[in-house]
Image 1 (spheres, helix red, strand yellow):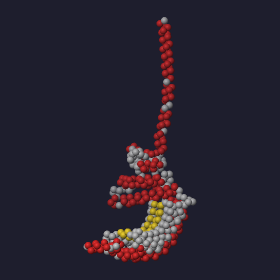
Image 2 (cartoon, rainbow, N blue to C red):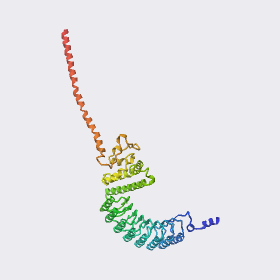
Image 3 (cartoon, rainbow, N blue to C red):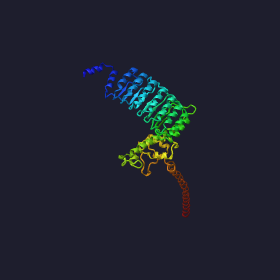
Image 4 (cartoon, one colour):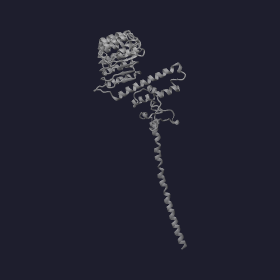
Length: 455
């Protein structure tokens, strides 16, 4: 035992790591050698130990100055390894030959879920090889090919692969100069019936213009799986952004559309379009949460207690969970022009103005819900018994007439003003004082007469 201990002390740390890896140490599940230039020689040594290993799940070799030689060795190990789930090779010098070897490994490997090849130089030849492998692979869920100069040729090849692949969920293609043509092909593939589907797509920094954005919008109308789409740092103007906003009226699954630093100096995106996109994506989040709640209510063990439409437990869950979300949507739609009547009804079912946090005071004020605005000094507000149920801002205007009714209630002030007219009549009634004064004069005259009689 002591001999083994001292032998480990004398060994190089990297050699100890290799020994543990080759011996299938059950406690060794993650290796992070990022920014520790082991170069091709170190990658080859790791590959030899990795081939027969059955415990390692994550291997991070980013920024290690690994070239094609080291990548080829690691690819050979992936062909036989059955435990690795994540392989990170970003920030190395891997070119198309290394990418081709890794693509061949993906055809055989059935356990790898994440492959990160970002910030390398695989170009369109490497992208084409990986695209062909995706057609046969059924386990890879995340592929990062950002900053690899694959251009539109590589993007088109990947788009064709997306038409047949059923496992990929996240794809990073940012900063690859794929342009409008590559972006169109990628989104067109997402409308393919066989795709079951890609959920997160990063096309930021791809030189996409209004033309590409309009094509993306058309694809979004039909897509039912994409949840996040990053189009920041492109050249999308107001026309492209408007098309995307219109597409979100049909699309109910996209929960984040990032335009960020997209810019077009000649046609900037208006604030109204930005708010429309934000409101629409937030509304899709609400729909997704409602669907999850409905699925929960449908389960056999929950059916008795949870009634999705009218059950008190479900209603309480909606109000407690979605009040803040609906309030956020309201803050983007102050003009009340973005949503249809049906969509407003959906939000109305999840909205309960009280209790209201002070942070929501301005939002409710904008919607003229003055009856339910709390005192700023109080933490919560309570609804008076005689006021009935809380009024939602989404109800029709005829039913929501808080402002007008308050105005009518103030009308008594005018009537009170008219009632002040009796003061004038009171002034007129003071005339009897004069008559009383005249009566005094009769007293004087009577006194004189008496004085005369006495004389």
